[in-house]
Image 1 (cartoon, rainbow over the protein chains, first blue to last red):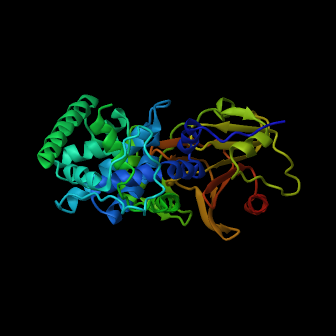
Image 2 (image 1 turned 60 degrees about the vertical axis):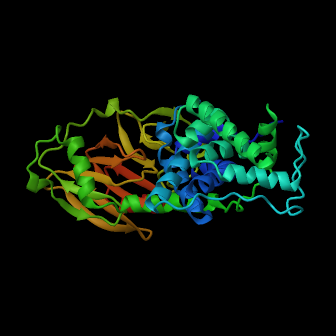
Length: 187
Length: 237
């Protein structure tokens, strides 16, 4: 008996590369959530994020011929989407940075408790989020990519268009700034 | 991981993001739109690209290369030139890898095969990966003695057909889709999905029917009459 397995990501990429739009649609479905969130963080509005992510996916399809076979697909894709979002934001003129909000208590009751067992009370969560929102944009983005979206260093580097070393140093600077801010709040 | 980092991760689970819209359908639609747009890309750009691609091969007088017709076959057009580039001998045709008809249908579900009476099953089926998405050739006869040759691909951009002075070009319809009937030798050029110009030189000194069905471009070559070619073309399923 032949058991048909769902195609792997690299098989889908290969098919899409050969012009299979259905295979590409599957790839879009698999990555649209993370792509949209990144575009939202970078572009700063939901509508622009949608446009940027869609445009990014279309551009990525066109650029598949340049995609290195066997390389991880997600960082490559996220880089294109993030670029698109940055361009949109730039051409729309500078706006106030997006302020992230935490879901109302209860409305996100489905969120699983963290395995690490660090459960923040609502008030502390609010303070921490305020501190993140108060960071300079490049630090806020690196924190959002690494901890909120849980991207790897490599993916964060691709998204922000910087080297992995820069992600490391920017992250530790951002963490230091957060500690300062939280220390002040508690002090 | 330090406590602050753990706290940030935990916070991430509570950060509100707008719900992700359905991007996949929109992207899919855009790919189709883009394909249609590319077919209609302005002439000037196409000519410039083509000029680079074949300028070295052809010694043509600019006035003669003027586009005679902007065919309705999406982006196809026919250019009359003084002299055609040399065509390779038929026996050296690079048709790609020989496969079975069943495999061709599997690899290219869009493949259309003629069912007209007297045509029968092709004697040779080959797939070339030269064109992204694949190009399928169906051949009746032998490589040295070709009776009928049907080439199909899902080309995106325009098709450029070079014909010599005196060649007959007639625009017609195949089942409501635009097509062209060409007498005399010609060269077919098209731009593939990556935007590269590909040269697909004339295989047969015979006549050619070129038409489009959906996204598929078909070229039927043989030593046949216009009516016979149309009969075969209309029978493709």
